[in-house]
Amino acid sequence: MLALFLLSVAMAAGAFWIAVSGSPLDYEVWLGGYLGTPFFALGAFLIGTRIFSRRVEIRIDGDGVYWRRWRPEPIPLSAIRSARVVEVSRTRMLGLSLHEPQRFVAANWWQRKIAAANRKLGYGEVLLVATGTDRSFDDLVAAFDMWFAGSGRMREGDVPTGH
Image (cartoon, rainbow, N blue to C red):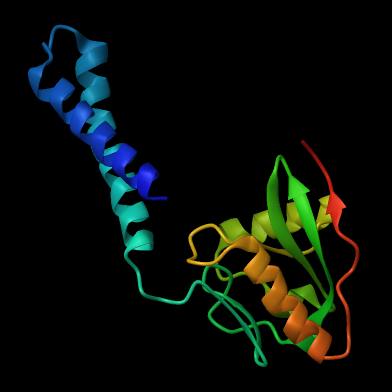
């Protein structure tokens, strides 16, 4: 994540340099510099806020599964029908299928669209990833298994779904 932040800063600086040092007669290069500068600067800002944020991204405990990007309230463990590890292009995710997905819809429209696509692909409504956290994916699964098993249920078999 830090490498992506540094790359965004470098790209914004490079685009700015192109914008101010390029000739207005070379329209494509000049325009690319002026469009690239705010684009990459915004990317650096968004990534930087995630890197240096002290807020909890994902929390799994007796209250349920809280994912800050999904919704402001946790999904209770009793609302989770099943869970399994899904692997797509070497990215591992914990897919949660919910008893009543309509009660726990995502807070933003983009996550709702992704949830609908995930459901159609058979991955569940919520796919948790450890990216952007200070823990590994194995830690995420272990925490989920501990609390989910404590509620008297076990996770489904893991399913590799792509290369």
